[in-house]
Length: 340
Ligand code: UT7
Image (cartoon, rainbow, N blue to C red; front, side, top):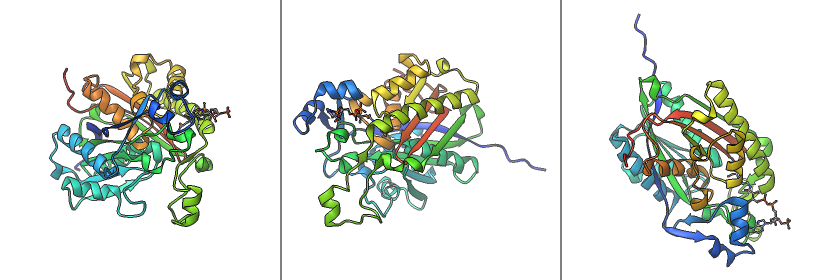
């Protein structure tokens, strides 16, 4: 009797795109009642990037994807699934940003769709790619986290406008028969009981575009910051402890811990609770702010481009966001490293 060989999902490459324009804390001091000192102390953020007016989520996603494809050494014709995580799609209803990106990349006749999991989007994408690959349905999946968060931020609201930025990150996830190259574990979850912690009320079926939406600013992100902060620390810590324990791995043996880049204080609290050394924790929040679904792949791209991420090294991803959603993943980098 013939037996099918097991197939594993492997992380082949990473790419990112960072818009040129910088919005500094000094710029924000001129826009709202805040100070550089307050922002740095409470969030660790010094600046964030803002896309140009005519630069859309799909443009940033396409640029990140082009890099990831080139670095994967896989021809774009071999890609058989394109998925994009975003809460700032080019169009809120249709078509999906994944379809637009596929077209811009010259990839046609492959399945393409978006997912909505806010800041957890990228790790959610990895779970989808893993399921498609390990079931044998797909071989090379292009995953993209892209956000033009500035399009839903109210730049008169000091409690949110200091946090968010724009950008994109992408990766190629491929089938392999080498178990050591495959994802070790991935956990993704959600609790809609906290749906009102992070909301963009409009446009949607509840609030289609109307004068009320414009008058009340319902098209902007609303956040219960402090409540979200406390739950983020608790959930992220618990999630990482569980995935490490389940796989018999000690936190000090993880070379790269890549948490969602929402707030330095959240990252520090989680890192301390896990007894992580500073050199293990990847930090980009200071220069990019919170880029939602793009945050983890942008951070990964940073350590890749600096030569810190080596082939075979373990990556621990941990994220938390609107929904509420959260997810963690433990996987080796199965791509070619940059040698510096
Ligand atoms: O990515 C998805 C998940 N999102 C997050 O994880 C975000 C989590 N939340 C946070 O990062 C933090 O809660 C914030 C940075 C948003 C706020 O920091 P906080 O330490 O939780 O402050 P707070 O909301 O409790 O506000 C403390 C004070 C308030 O003033 P009073 O009431 O004490 O007089 C705020 O009005 O700070 C005030 N405040 C500000 N002051 C100067 C709020 N925003 C600002 C500001 N500049 N930008």
